[in-house]
Length: 354
View 1 (cartoon, rainbow, N blue to C red):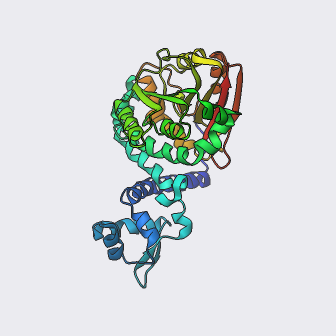
View 2: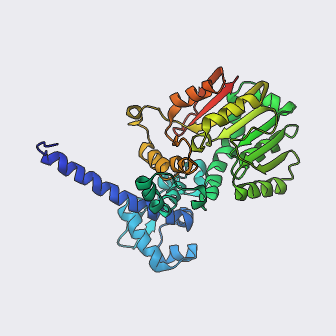
View 3: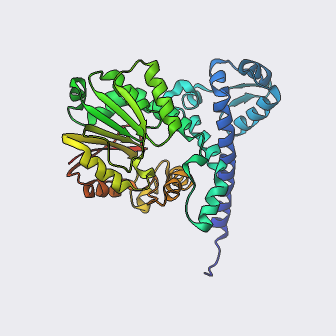
């Protein structure tokens, strides 16, 4: 395609690419700041030298000093050249430290390392087809467990479960509940502790995740929570009043099979509560998505490819709400309601009944 190049547009795009490269590498430094707890340490310190910050964090000063240089030019940490001191503004700490809870964006930069570790495998899949197997992501369970725990601890009981009218009261009276793709089982354990009369079962194909779930249930002395390693595409082991699937369905090899199994496994009046990514199924409607590039990248580097590795459908993270509702109705759910939490642009919640 031959066309005259607009030099102003070309220069602007070159600037955009330089911005991208700077931000990408800055993200790696932010990940290091999270993992070393440097942000948490600086939150508690007044303006301090690199030596004082390194001592407080128990780290090597030379590395900390170079890291601080990146933080300063990246406009994340402030610097007084006269005193040679650095400080983390409270407005920045509110989104960078563990004290920020679900607002700790520094946590998510750890996924850059996870994605980079499988880049070669994904490149092979681009050329040869197939996908990258789940066992290529050894740190995924831990990161997902830490990420989701912040959501479940703060919002599962007061905000997410009440999306299904009357569900809290029914759980207090006693229901049979199964959580699919339970990961490290934290959602199940939070519910089991809150509703001792209900019976909870968590399923996941990851033995490591199930081991962690059982350990937490044991430490919390929960007699009403159990966990099993299982294939979620198989028929569910029983009939249930409530089925939950949190950030799971789009990763599956056979999502339509699993959704149909869920519909069949619900008791009369039963509820399926599904959390998935908030997005449109139409690309043009995702242009203003606040995390659009990140989510499409996450889909290429994990969500889509782990499904394709199992010769699956490869839905991907951005399958969108229109497709999700269509799949639910095809699975046999006649009543599908979609909810969103205020201040959470990342998740959509579906309350479905047959």
